[in-house]
Length: 202
Image (cartoon, rainbow, N blue to C red; front, top):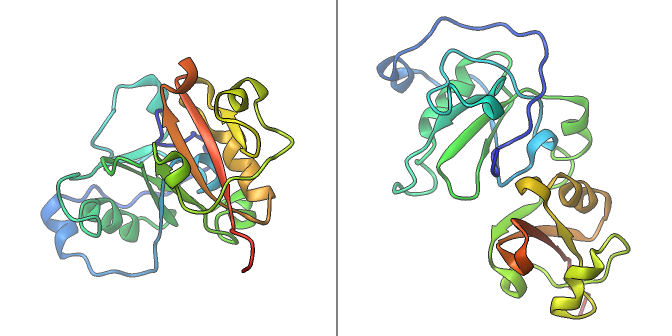
């Protein structure tokens, strides 16, 4: 999916289907992590749910519990339905919201998410380039053909088929990496990830 998640499956338990009115009256029962950007499998594993209300018939969304958000609402409330649903589902531990703020994917905790997104926060931005949080820095994994377009001292990686998993994994591995800026249509690529790093101490 374009910046919405990468599917994994485990055994699951569902509560009965709840209407939006019932969900609106539900009281929070647990703390739900909210992640913004294409964390994918690093946010947790996907699982099926009857509450899914977007991309129900899309093959690439099979196995994922995806709930539409209201992009025109303030950021805190645009995905309120997804948050309430996660609170009600015993297997849900996190809500991953795409950069555009239009779709939320509910996630189950996994060994990988416990090692990555639970230990470190990465900020995702879109088409911010050198204005993204942090600063540029060279990395050994840089795509040399991309770096030639912007000069040395940058860490640019291709996101084939809009999949930035490699770049996200690298950012989690590099202690000083704090952000990933995803640029669309750069250098003829569908998407390119630009890793950004903690600025040097003054």
